[in-house]
Image 1 (cartoon, rainbow, N blue to C red):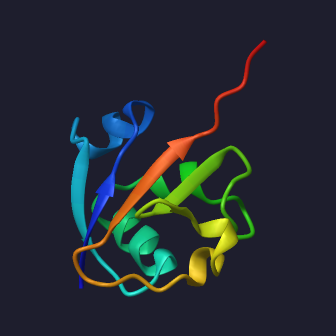
Image 2: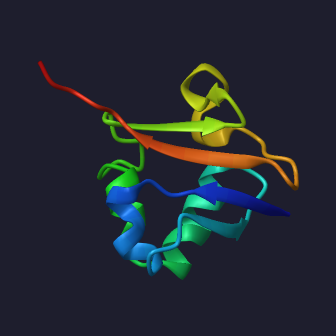
Length: 91
């Protein structure tokens, strides 16, 4: 199933400048895996060494934070969108 992934500005150098890409996958983990195959380097920006989502990266399925769903195992329906949102810190 095809999913739209919204790419933040900080990662667009890895997607040839594209703000949105179409990726296949039935779960968030499958989408990230396929995203890495198409755009090498993006996976390591999203996942840590153990394969978990990095603390400073938020991923939303439609408007729901996947951490409050089933994390990387969250199922995705065709036509839904994932948004990658880097955490913002400052003072």
